[in-house]
Image 1: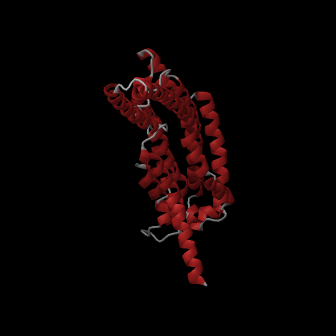
Image 2 (image 1 turned 135 degrees about the vertical axis):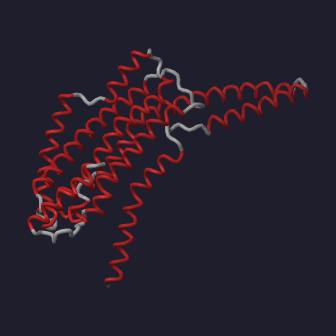
Length: 312
């Protein structure tokens, strides 16, 4: 968090020395430039800490020893050196491209200290690609974790909620860091075609990041619910077969009354099974993610429409 004021102070000291600002004068763009480093570092912390917490929550469903679990967790939260270094270097190059592209459209004051500004673009983008690579690895491992338990308990989905919560919170953090707050802090950057394209592609990528690792276990849970429903239907069919002869042929009405009570219980069982959830997230998780992604877009569109009518 110290980066935020330190970067802003460094930029102001250079701007005051160069005469771009009057001594003591504050500039919002220069003062908030450190956000690009602070935001991605906070996301990186969550990628490491939040993922570990989600896996710990899922631990009761993993039939492994403590040593095996420690190895699984290590692979889940650790970035491999070789690929990590490669993505970091690719991010440095992409950050330089984005920074110079932004320089062409940004106010001159933004680049009063161009070495620092371009360095922020490079380091921020490098960390973004590094953590993006780690998130992709984690999503693949989450699919593998969901496939490990042989038995699925539809009546106890709580341990599976941790991964969906992690993916949703991470998606919201990425959206705020890459699209929403940049639009507020540095709207001129979106005049750069590179920056604009990166932001447009963000929302569908976040939705895929949330959906894909959970889709496999959803299919397994649907199959398990269908199995339970088949069993419930078979028991209902059996009790109905017994009720008809007892009622109309044998006239054993006391037995019919008892079997009707059993039938009612079986019917309630079937309705309960039909109502079981097959998505591994709490009801409000997806709603919160969609609201965070699309509400700002809707507000911007409404503002543009209102501005268009007022302008005409």
